[in-house]
Image 1: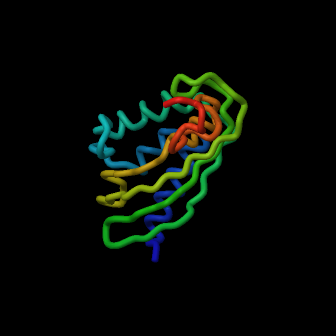
Image 2 (image 1 turned 120 degrees about the horizontal axis):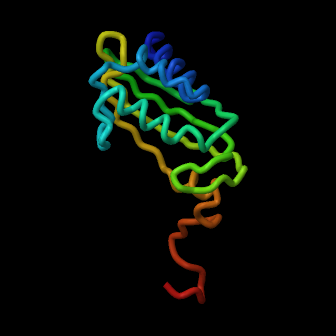
Length: 147
C-alpha cells in the first residue's frame, strides 16, 4: 500500500516536470540528493539536468501507474507523455507524441527524496521521436538483409 506522503512527493515531481517549474525541487529533494548511476550528485545538478532537457517537449502530462512503500523507501512506476516540439537529446523536433515509461526506487529522508535509482527504456522513446526507425531494435534482420 502506498504511503500518502510518498504519493504527495510523486505529485510534486509530476507538477515540476509537466510545468517546467524546477524550483519545486527545493521542496521535493534534499540538498545532497543523488541519482544512482549518474553524475547527478545534488539537487542543483538535478535542476540543471531537467532544465537542459525541458525545452524539447510540450503538452506534458504524467501518470502514476503503481506504487509500493515500506518505511522510508518507495517504488513507483510512472508514465511521462509529451509532444516532441523542440530539440531533445540532440534529436530535432518531430511533432510526434512521445511516451516514456519509468520505474524507480526512491529513498526519503526528512520528508524529501534523498536518493533515486531508476530504470527506463529510452529506445521506444527514440523511435517515437523519429531518431530510430520504426520496429527498431529487431532481434534479427529480416531474411536477405545481411547482418
